[in-house]
Image 1 (cartoon, rainbow, N blue to C red):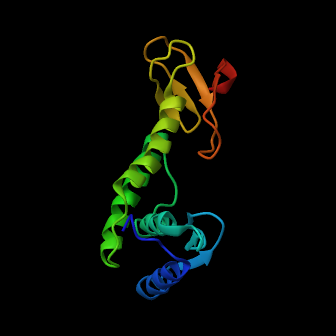
Image 2: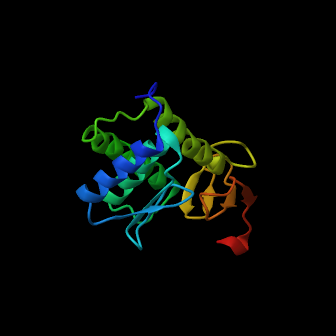
Amino acid sequence: MGAIVWQKTNMETLVSKLKQDYPGFVFVVGTALCWSPEQKQVLYDPTAGTEGAWGLLHELGHARLSHNSYASDLDLLRKETAAWHEAILIAKNYGLTPDQEHIQDCLDTYRDWLYKRSTCPTCQSKGLQTNSQRYECPNCGGSWQVSPSRFCRAYRRRATTDDK
């Protein structure tokens, strides 16, 4: 499938089939790929090409696996991986094979994000997440705050006693 040019009509055909096969979910044209558990909507970009089709199947994977939230950074990575595995299974029903390199590139963005967030700003060791916005270092005893958003750059701020 990698060498085949994915056209808008291919995406429309795929979405039409998905709507029939997954009537419990709503497929909505958008500018980004995402799963909205509140509205049971899978947003997709019909002009995104082949990788957009793979992303659509990935977001449908989240929907089928009932991914509503995540408890920790590692849990998010696990859910992203599970959604890609589900996407591969879904794709087989439509004669598609998502590119493994693309999948690993997507997962690498989460791995890199997790690596940066978990790196101790004091000694550069890897820390342990103690809540959604806090890490602690088993090496030097330091702690730091991280952003609650997975969409912003990974930043770390040394925690103070007021942050506990």
